[in-house]
Length: 468
Image (cartoon, rainbow, N blue to C red; front, side):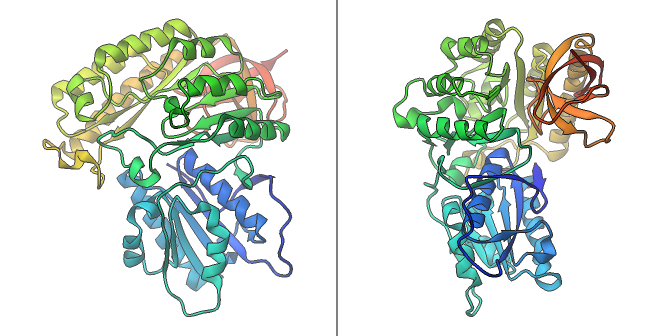
């Protein structure tokens, strides 16, 4: 889970001059959770600035503090609650007059949050992000304090005209292409928090990409809950293919990186587009969740081991230089030693480039809660640690195999480790979730693409120097 402590802003996107005069109310903002949450935070930040509020990175100076929460798994929920409690202290020690919880946890637990956390003034669900400025003004109005809920079914989906203040690097941006999910995976509460899938029109996404490119963005990361299913609700038969064909035409974009491809509906047309279009990164993010047939069926996942292994082989044949990132869940109810060992053997044999391993947790409202044969936490921990150790060995070997090669790298800037190194990524490394390339010789600006000869490798990071 990523936490952005109060705000670290880069540059504004389509933010108009503030309309209010005089002293501006200060806003402190905390972003928790995934990249989809980050986009929501950026839209709320842009809306607030556009409406005359002033952002501050000093929480003690913030009159309104907004926590954009995550409610995906138990650890994420607890982190959100802890963050709310921590920032509630600013009502005594800082300038805070209003404390707001927004986002997934707010949408999911609504009144429970207000009841259990009396420090909160407002709870704002995922369908109300566009109203955040009006909500802040309402809670700031001079009247007797009372807690308020702003919760509706989540129809809200930003478009290319939405004000947005981006967090993070100037040369890389997330673009949310859809919201919600139509699938019914037994372990997942996303449809409860985000609703059914709602895709943005192709024209809206392309317009946003064009604007971002004009502002200096070189990489756009396409995100949603179910990217492979993009456009189905709009009547598009091969929506992701249609979208990518338009995005590759956007001038000045260098990398287009789709995230979260469900392992069904992957057509040869899509894989050929990946292989043939230089701007589409040769990087697939495809959570498989398990490989045992019985576990996949209990999880309500489409397909079985045979279809998954055939798909992985087809992807690697169509895109020989692909970087394959996947994710698995251990400890799902009914995962026997035999089922886990089948998964372990598969991870050893498949040799993916990146593997994330999550522990199953009961999530209220999901069908998995009622399943029998729960797995003890200690067993889950042991299984996750074993899988991660196997993957660490695989990733280390893959990194060492790159020593001596020359790779195109997008420079991120001065390394967070030391000012004596630059830091960058090749197209097989996604921001924030994968490793980096440390550059120990040569100069380049952030956002610049350079050729780097790899001279050393750690488990997930590479080291090299710039070559002409």
